[in-house]
Image 1 (tube, one colour):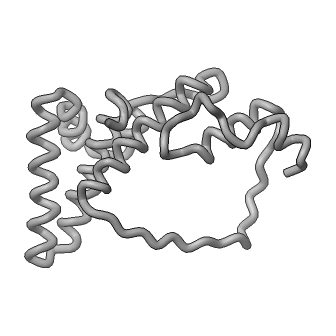
Image 2 (image 1 turned 180 degrees about the vertical axis):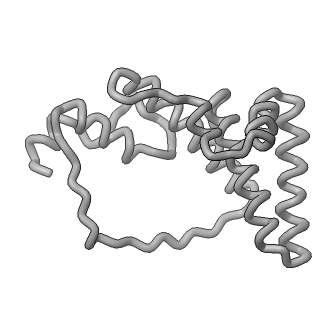
Length: 151
């Protein structure tokens, strides 16, 4: 990126305060300034990350809140799909579970049950079931973050 373009776009946006997706937000500002990204397949990175279940849940909520913030800042540039984007690819019964978990009482029950399932399947050595429960929990938390923020 040319220095002049970087200065025109700005490396950080003081209006974007979420932890997740600042790279997406930066890319949208570049696009709005007429810049185009180029995919370079030879660039590779490995991401090693470990965290507790509670940190996983907080991160997922932050991801949802970040998506919402990007939609608010760049709604004219992107097709804001909102909650539908977070539900994409889920079978209908699981979409219903995630949607219903966006209500406060349902959220507490659903997120609690899924967290317990993640822990229990880890203890008994069922990694496939643990992964499935964690993926559904992530969606529940992302929708929660999209609706009410990352707190």
